[in-house]
Amino acid sequence: MAKDWRLEINRILFMLLAGGLLGFLFGNVPLFLFLALLVYVVFSVLQLRKLDRWLGEIKEGAQAPPPESYGFWGQLFDAVYRLHRDGIKAREDVQHILARAQKSVAALDFGIILIDRKNALEWWNTKAEALLGIRFPVDRGQNAYNLIRDPRFTSYFSRQDYTEPLIVNAPVNNNIILEFNITRFGENEKLMIVRDVTQVQKLEMMRKDFVGNVSHELRTPITVISGYLETLLENNQILEPRWKKALEQMHQQSLRMENILRDLLILSRLETRAISLDQKPVNVSGLLKEIKGDTLNIFEDKDHSISVECDDNLMLTGDRGELYSAISNLSINAAKYTPAGGRIVLRGRRTATGVEVCVEDNGIGIAAHHIPRLTERFYRVDVSRSSSTGGTGLGLAIVKHILARHGATLHIESEPGSGSRFCCRFSNRSLSDAA
Ligand code: ADP
Image (cartoon, rainbow, N blue to C red; front, side, top):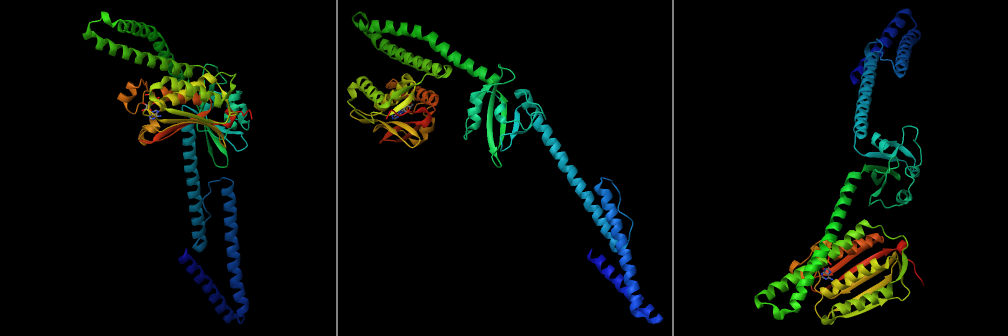
């Protein structure tokens, strides 16, 4: 364009020169200079008019070629035309990408819903329509709270924390089980993902039922076997000495198997039974004192010193039996994994966010890399030691389940050789204080 500008300036200078020469010949230089400029201005205005008309046609959507012109104006028209064509191409490309993205999102096997910051439904794919019974565009702008009329959905949606998914029955068909995941983006807008997890839930239920049934069915035979073995060992005068050791080992293993089946049954019940709705206030200090007594009874020979540090008025709302089971599991572990004469503290206290119940010992401790895996089923730090202390590897899995049912979490701190602290943190909603 710089070259065109130079040509254009040359053209103006040439016209002025021609006007000046003619003016000189006719004896009126200013008039001819003025006429020369007038010609140039009229020509430029005509070109601008052409440009304006053409731009108007383009704006209307016509595919009109640029007007005919030459010199600087011709170049300008061509440049505008090229820009226009590039713009159309870029728009077509973006539209193409958008269409593909929309098609692929529509084809996804899970529902996607965009929710604006006022909680109104903004956009969703076809799978979301099938799963939730919403229709486009009729339901556009509907409040997200109306998606599913289930109190669990309402409380989940209004929550600020979406780390855990929500599982509820589909509004269109009660036999379909849906999993909701919410992610925030932009200015408090939400992206909701809905999956049909009916099959997975069915399989999970079958697994739970299977473990529960097998544990239940095996319990009676094992009890009979260990009962007879016990009787045989009690009457050891009639036993041949070479059988004694074998029978003792059989008895020990059958007792271990009984313990495993008992813990598996507890876990299976915790998994399949809904938490009782009539949870009652539980006095924490009373609970800890009872657990202290029971632990001392079981580990009489270890001569541990167990103390309870808890305000007498501290209360928790929950299932007392389950809370007893969880905290006594921790207390029994503390006694098990602390050498004789150890110090164990059962502590209950209020915190800024709720109530914390901790079991602290000065026992063998646990290496840091084991800690994240301790609540997995059958996970044991030292299999031989755990088996010799009658451990099943299921105790902490039971604790975790019970705490989850009470909206609480387990926090473990430990140092090998120094001791461990297992803390159950109950949030404010699972707590009431009698004080
Ligand atoms: P187990 O029945 O084997 O005790 P748990 O699930 O109760 O199973 O505990 C898992 C493992 O965590 C145990 O095998 C043990 O190694 C370790 N553990 C639990 N509590 C303590 C503790 N207070 N001190 C040291 N190790 C512990």
